[in-house]
Image 1 (spheres, rainbow, N blue to C red):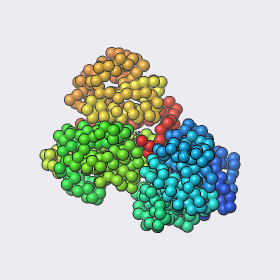
Image 2: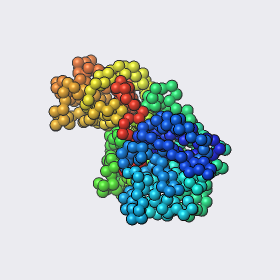
Image 3: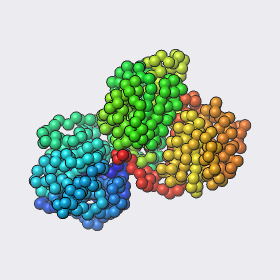
Image 4: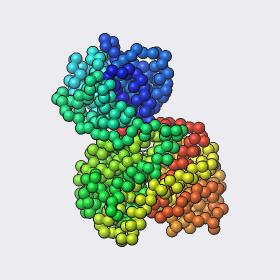
Length: 607
Ligand code: F6R
């Protein structure tokens, strides 16, 4: 949520900032801006509403002189509408800054500053932060930052230029992410590694309440008191190629096609000698042996992966599993104790609500295990144990490959618990592990349906409303399919338990409301057929996603997506591909911005 990048070095800062912003644009894209600083000059700020391309155009017309130090920002509006004045960077006195996060006590600070006749020109909390730092500034950047951090409440990652320190950039953070890279050509800092991977794979995460000082010759990590600290270096396991479209028209389609590989890299290393091993991640077997219940908490797509995990675990382990939306978790006063395993799921590892849920779980003494894609992210660092998914960077705002690897991680955890607690017969264990091994191939096979799905998605091009229905695991996938469709195609969509529709919502079904019916479970298939007939009788057109034989009821659907046959436990992986492609092509057919749907941002770092 908001992308930030800064550079100080021997190259021209402007193209570095603009290229970095293009790569970070998925974090927010309603306005963008840069400020550059040259020796003996005050910072030059160029900003505009719209996408980074608008900013590029504006920069090209103004053709600023080469500068070796600069900061850049792409915004997802929180305080104040989308306008040029609210776009970052913001300047107050000697201070020019960019900000990712939310200052919760900005109103109190604004009142305090107003008493001294200092008023903002924008409606943003970020400008108030710039004013506060400027107010606390007496020529010593570290002191001003320290004093300000003591007053600021909320989340922030700031990159700050001080006009009288022209070859330096000061960065500080609380909760919002900042990663740093240093090379022979200079020092770089950004919200995430997608903007920096082409410069180096070695990086460090700026610890909270620490200052990173960027100069041409390197980055100094300091405490708020100004004492030097050694950064903890990390190494990215992916490269610049992973963050490019590589010939695909959109990142979303590329990422859908990457799933066989991301499943392979997530599952394979954990399957050893007909067993599941988390030795590399140092997760002890004892973690899985003595809890009595599981709580899964996450947001959006990650939470939908949790819904799949619940059905699977309750069926195979007979342990109660609750799935809680992270944004509600804290306020529901959840029942947690040392006999509860809390599994938090997050692609970015930075989602503010999920992080807050994790902190609460720890506070209440529960054991915590995080499923995270971004290495070293806040959730990964704060959770007691981490099981990384290895999907590589996910750039499209709509999550696809992260979802299937999150599910695969839950399958691994479920398998691990079943094996440790001796709940599986030898035959079941080997078929379960075989099913996991088979996932990349299964997904590859499902991807062959793409031309067919592309064709039938025309049924959705002109509709305004839709339903996704299913039962059991298929209901969890209906939730994910419906979320995916609405976020990229702007077609209003509801997910419903198929049997529940007739208790009210069926009133909404007309011939203008297609229903996507997911039915992969043999046991519930006859009931699903009845539910489908109920909506069909009310005029709805049906898109049926199934691996069942429909020869006795071929008339129930206007279109069918015939999934490859697989073990009933693993159908979420085939259904995922079908609903992802359906949503993708609905967006393409409607001519929308697939990778950056309106109002959204990739990493939601505000509560
Ligand atoms: C939907 C989507 C979101 C995220 C949610 C959580 O396609 O991407 O619903 O799943 O914002 O994000 P993470 O997984 O980063 O915590």
